[in-house]
Image (cartoon, rainbow, N blue to C red; front, side, top):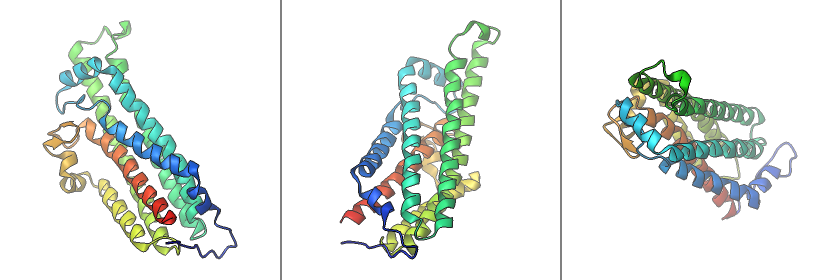
Length: 253
């Protein structure tokens, strides 16, 4: 089925054409696959509530820790381009809202990328540099664990921005004449879900897999487990990429 875009500003559908190009499809696939890799790289390194065990795991699997970080950065880079493509796609529907959506997405990406500094900090703290000899081993382990918690909290903040992004993209998709409205509804519902992170207690109650006693990527008994924030941000971008791929597939069907 072909969905035609009814444009009132005289544009020729270049946004759709860009999405239909091979480069666009390859980008979505790369984002999806890299996000999946980021979810499994370094699995089980962080143990909730146990700074010593976490430090031991990180040092024993430092390469996996680095691979996970690199995959997260690649996902972020890809999603910045995805954001640009979606801006062009939905600009004819409502230029202001499409620009606002892009702003929210880019801010979320920026916060996610900046939070990577907190994720890398444990490698420096646990690296055994001479200037760190003034600290005891348990102090360094606690400090490394604290940086992971800060990374989780920063990632949760980025999810709020991605929530606004999904909500706006969902509205634009619903209002468009070239996409099935159900895609817009599903995207908006997903955005509302991520907006629950405006209230951490509410998000914790709604997402027990992220804050309960068991987590798909490791043991977790603490709602603020360091691993949770990083995984949620990666799942969020990967999930949005899945939605983007569904839109592309629909336009090609």
